[in-house]
Structures are given as C-alpha cells and as structure tokens.
Length: 128
Image (cartoon, rainbow, N blue to C red; front, top):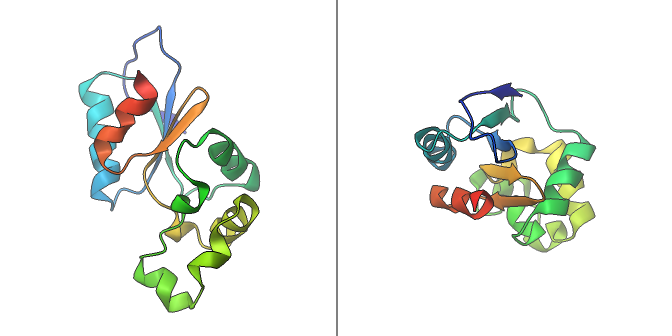
C-alpha cells in the first residue's frame, strides 16, 4: 500500500482496494484526492489479497457479503457458477481467492467500516 495524498490528521487512514480500469474506482480516488483525505491504494489485481485481507474486508463491510462478487460480469457467467453458490462469507472468500478479478470495486475501508463504493460517492459513508 502506498500513501497517495496529504491527510487530515484527525481521521484514520482510508484504504482503497482499487482497479485502475474501473471508472467507479477512479472516481472514488478522485473524491478522496479532492477532499485531501489520506489514503492508501491497493491494486488487488497486481498485489493479490490474502485470506486475512478478505476476512478483514468482510468483517467491516456494511453491504451484504455476496455483493463483493461481480455476478453480473461476463467472466462470472463464463465460469458457469450459480450466484447462489457465492452467498455466504466463506463461499465469497474462497471464490475471490481464486478469482480476484471478479471482486466488486472499489472497496473503501476506514476504521471499522468498509463500503463497496458504487457509485463512487458512497466513499462518503466511511468518511463521516
């Protein structure tokens, strides 16, 4: 993880699990930059997430855990997996360890909260 911006010293660091090819992910970073919020960027397709990373995200996620999987993505449908098979926490973690490219993005974490920032403006949910 690399710090990307100066920070407001009264707030915990924000971590963005980022895919640079995703417009929503780029949008979330833009919001953090415009607000001068300190943030770390993790390009999870370059530096794959561990089981512990995924467990941390899931434990803080305010969204339903199954929303972490891009079940509408062509890559998902090409696998022939039934979306009902990736609904539990353990199923989602196991699936994303094998198919990190199918993780929803961006995931924005601050303190004890994490959100899937779709739309990008949802980043505000962990800032306030």
